[in-house]
Image 1 (cartoon, one colour):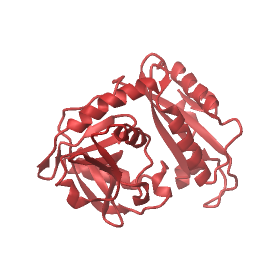
Image 2 (tube, rainbow, N blue to C red; image 1 turned 90 degrees about the vertical axis):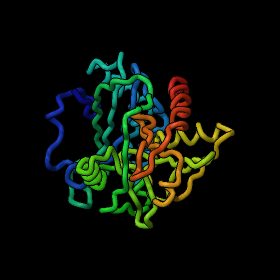
Image 3 (cartoon, helix red, strand yellow; image 1 turned 60 degrees about the vertical axis):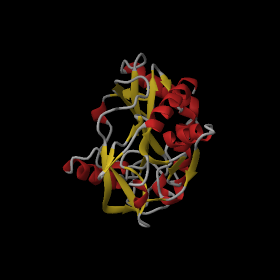
Image 4 (cartoon, one colour; image 1 turned 90 degrees about the horizontal axis):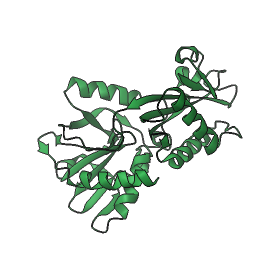
Length: 280
């Protein structure tokens, strides 16, 4: 069961061909992890969603506050029997039907759906995780490229490319040929005591987990966090590469081309992330 504008209903009775998210990608989404009914990093998710809606000139309803959406998420979890488990929650916001490229209204609707997750805490996987560059298409850096919109064709085609080449993921490049992010998360590159991640100005997603890890790393005196462009040449010179997203937390990269990597920093950060998760 899903939550459509505050009403719990069947998943098959909501979308049609006039839905602007379907027809034009006129839509935003937030993917959130919950643990036994607790919404992780909820404030960060909420404010990113509100900022993104403003950028897309969507009308934010007066009642669309943190308390309202939190209650709707918890109601959806309860209906689906997920208050005593961990879950993936997806909030999709789309402009209401009407118009072609030019909408007839800026009013919005929302859908909340949920799926169970196996892991309650963030864990480091020891399975092989090989990546390569995806160079068929490039990200054009702009404010829009930092948003979680429904325009994810590059990520879809890149994921197909990864599967065809027996890769677990790919790293994307922007039009300046800098490494921007992975297909499903932000990228961090470690060399010595310096941990680097791409700046938002390079076009990477304004990731919620990226934000948490930046705060964690900045609190560790032994390491220096730098938001700076990453060249493809740096990847093979690095000691460690890891990918971050809200659901997985941290995914260490074990291999890029002929180079294998350690996961020392990933294991350190995952411990601190789980502590932060419990306190959030």
